[in-house]
Length: 251
Image 1 (cartoon, one colour):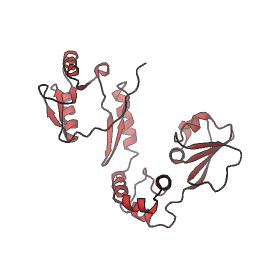
Image 2 (cartoon, one colour):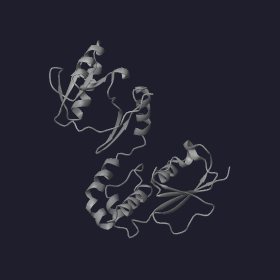
Image 3 (cartoon, helix red, strand yellow):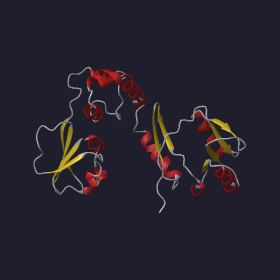
Image 4 (cartoon, one colour):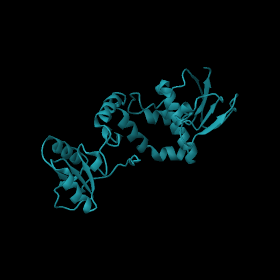
């Protein structure tokens, strides 16, 4: 069985990448590489990566692979060492969507749907979090406390899917209860995780622990972070640190 690839972001600024081919597809690949800062070179040059968009890709790919170069061949996933995802940019935030070469159309459709969900202010929020990194570290020296504080904020007042003012991170840090995480109860309406609201899905992804009744469907529990503690109980323990999401299921 073919395994899915490992998603990585490669820094190409100033580095050579081979491009073989002419025409509209090759031109689009060239624009993509140049936007990433790569130096586009031909097959005669040395490089670690190559993009191929030509009429006879098999022989070209074989020559490049014999030189230990990782190759992407347009519309030929069977010849690819790596694939190129559909990309959403909110600089410095980049969202990449890949299907392992199964369907570029599906990746493009997902990009179009997600593009509408990500506000223009998202990149500014990322910059603000980076700019205030020292302030955040000083306020929460413990890494666990820091992760919980940021997670709680991103699930609430710093909601990344809501258009935010430029000073939203600074205003969050100025509030006395900025690190409060708390307790949230979710009354499940369905055993299908796709029926979770965006807010519920984000809370599960941020939770430090999930308390739940024994009959809560496993498909819902898998939406929580892999390292989140799971506690099956009828009555959730009180005063737990961090963010606790309690799941109720009455179906």
